Structures are given as structure tokens and as C-alpha cells.
Image (cartoon, rainbow, N blue to C red; front, side, top):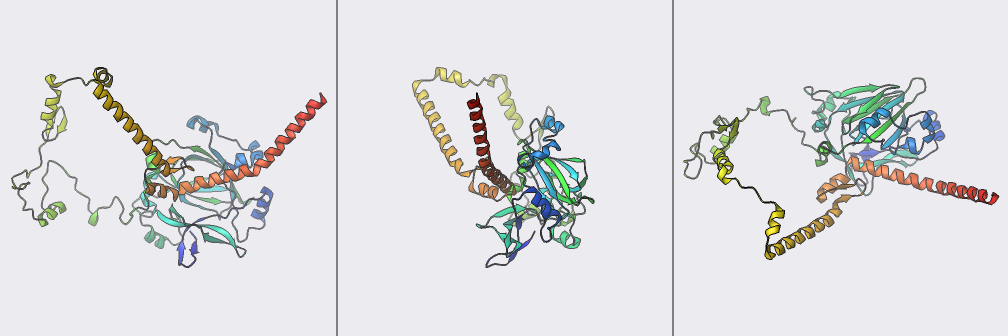
Length: 424
């Protein structure tokens, strides 16, 4: 996480995007092997660059893995090529893709935590910056207009362990499991489930000096996991106390409806401070003091009065089938029909108004609908939105770049066709 000096402000930490530059593959290799002093060349675009930009390499790399297509019942959304060295690392993040990561040269080291460990990630909102050329050097520069990203600043293997434990006590809590460390070598494939947190390091091949990998992204199913996917969208968590800790290190006593609350209970003490004398509840202090005794019927505990209510409504003389709406409409009078149609019209107008209002809180880039301005703003500052935005921009730039080439090819095709017709 670089330190950036804001114009007119103090130095601050930020989420810094890399400097991106388009170049021929041969120029990249020359920079990578000969001129990388002061820079960290890394080939990665996350726009299915293997199929879109390096299609000739598909003769050596499968465009998809057969077993994955059967498991996910779909073709991959993107197939990406990654080339870098040991200086390139990816901070903790999660992706809404099922990820199959294959290493070809060198080694990749993944530090993994499940989605439920979001409370350990010490998430915070950080200003967004990007490396840019300033006076001939790459320096982080804050983006304008200013924006923020929800980000995890934790490094799994910090140089100063004591300082890291003080800054991120939940992540380094010795009573909690350590992140899974998975080393993926040449010929290995790692299945990384969607929305798992992962920090990625790499080790260059000793002979060739680079690390080369290909990954296949399959869009996750937005079922019950979507709730987990949005767990960190509420913003930074209050991580001052671990969720499994109890005050003064003592385990909390489980509440029970069969045991009266004693005077040592904090709630009991608060009621006493508010004037309660420990007598019965109610204005006249003649109410219940002991816990309500629940009855037992057919093995199910019933609350006060619930048994009598069930007996009343399940009695044979009180059972009456509820009429269907079509039966009611068949017997309705003109006045009721008029009211029903007016109500249906009002509901349709309300539905249209709500739909029109919700368009204001719709993110076209991610195809997601939100209900409030706050939800939309939190989404627009999230890592996932920025990720999809960059992906869309990269694809648009690629389409623009190749448009003229496609037009020239079409013109040549038409000329060949015209020539063939003339020769006939």
C-alpha cells in the first residue's frame, strides 16, 4: 500500500492501481528480461486476454478444461494469461468467479481464507490512486475526482510481525486458524472457489526467470452465496473486539425460560437502577415474577395461551375452507368489481413508479439493482465495481483497436469475391 502525498494535504495510505501500457509482446519480453530496473513488468489484463489478444498461443493451451465445463455446465467467462516475477504480489481480495488456476512456469503461493472470515480482514475505505509517469518516474497519484475503495491492507507474511499483530489483531489472533497456504507448481491446477479471500505471491522459474500461469474464470451462481458475497459491502467492520470473545474472558451464560434472572445479571441491575424494586411486573407490581411455564403438546413447547388458540382454530366446528379468489369474483357485485379493478390499477401505477425510481439506483456496468443512494454509492466504491469497470473499458478499447482491422479484412474479402465473380 503506497504512501501518497495529496495536493495540499498530508501523506496518506491508499489503494493504488498499476500503471498500464499497451505494447507488442516482443517489447514486453525485452522490458521484462533486459530493462526492468525500477519497474515491475507484469502481463495481466483480466479481459480474457489469452483468447482475445494471444489467440495464437491457444495451440499450446486448452481454451477450457473439460471437467470444469461439465462441473459448471458453462464455458469460461474469461481465460487470462499472467506473466511476472517474484516482485509482483496481489493483495487480499475476493472474486465472484469460480477460478481454476493453472501454473505453467515458476510457482504461485496462495494464502486463503473462507468468506466467513471477513471479520478478520480489517477492511477499510481507502482513497484510490494509480501509478503514473511523473518526471520520468512511476509515482502513485490520487485519482480525480476522488474515489474510495473498500480494501484489506493485511499482509500474511509481514516483515515486522509485532507491528502487524498490533495493527491487525484479528487476522493474527493465535487462537484462530491460520490462512491456508497453497503452493501451485508447474502442471498443477488450483480450484479457488468464488468469494474466497486470497493473497497471491509468485516465485520465478530458476532457469527462465519468470512465472507464467493461465486461469479460467466461471461466473458464480448467484444463489444463497450472494448474501455472503455482499457481507463486506456494509463497509468497515468494528474489529475492536473479536466476535468470539466475552467480556473479562468469561463465557456468557445461556438464557433459559425455566430459570429466573438473578440479581447478578446486568439487565436485572439496570432495572433496579431505573426504580424497579424486584416485585411483580406491571403498574401495580402484581404481575409475573417467575418465568412463564410453557406447556407441552405433542412434543412441541407452546407459549402462554398458545395451546388455547390452537385448540380454538383447529376445532372441527371452526374449520372453514377459505374461498378462492376466482370463486369470490364469480359472486361479486358491480360495486366490488369496480373497487377491485381500481385497486389493481393503483397497484400497477405504484409498480411502474417504483420501477422508474429504482432505475436511478441501477448500475449499468455490473447489472445490479439497489434500493437506496447509500447502497449504490457503497457499490460504486467497491473493488468488484472497479474490477468490472476496468474489464469493460479494456474490452471497449480492444474493440476500438480491432475495428479498423476488421473493416480492412471485410474490404479485402469483398474485393476477392468481386474478383472471383469477374473471372467467372
